[in-house]
Length: 112
Length: 115
Image (cartoon, rainbow over the protein chains, first blue to last red):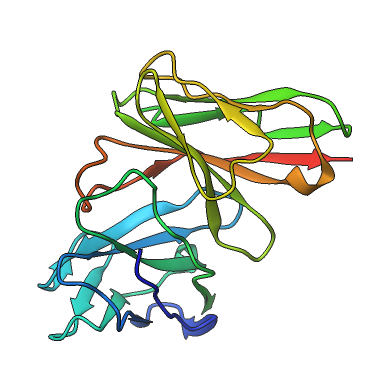
C-alpha cells in the first residue's frame, strides 16, 4: 500500500471543527483513501473512505484534493469523545488480502 | 449486535507457555485477520484468512499459528510465548477481500503480557 504522512498530534477545542490532514503524494489512480480512528483502549473503528469526490457521513467529512495527493478528515463539531488516534490509510486497487497498513496516525487532543 | 468478539481481554503468560486467543464474528464475513499493536505504534498484520480453510501470512507471522475451520472463528495460537510477543492483539473482519473500498470491523483487543 502507498505511504501516507500525517502530523503526530493535533489539538483542538471542544465544539469547534477539526481538520486532520493527510499527504499521500504517491497515490495511484485507483487507491481508495480510508480513515480509521482508535479511541483509548479500544480497537480501531472505521470513519470514512473515498476515491475522488468529497464524502460525508454521520461521523465526518472527507475532502480530497483535486490531484488526490492529499486529503483532509473534517470533524464538524469536536466533542471530548472524539479524542483518539486517527489513521489515514490507502488501499490499493484490487483489494488484496493483506489488510490495511496502519502508520502511527495523528493523536487528536480535545480541550474542554 | 455482537460484531467481532475477542477473548480473553487480558492474559499473562510465562515464557514458553502456549495459549490461544479467540476471535469470533457473527456478520458472515469472508475475511478475518489478526494484528498486533506495540506501544506507540500502528497495527501490524500477523495472519489473515480469506475464507474457511484458507490462511496466509501477514507482515509479522513468526511465532504464531492460525486456522480457519469455520467462517465465524479465527483463533490465534502462540505455541511457545516469548517476551517479544507482549502486545495488544486485535482481530478484524470484513465482508470480502477483493474490493479496496471494504471496511474492516475490529474487536476490542486482547492485552497479552509474557514474563
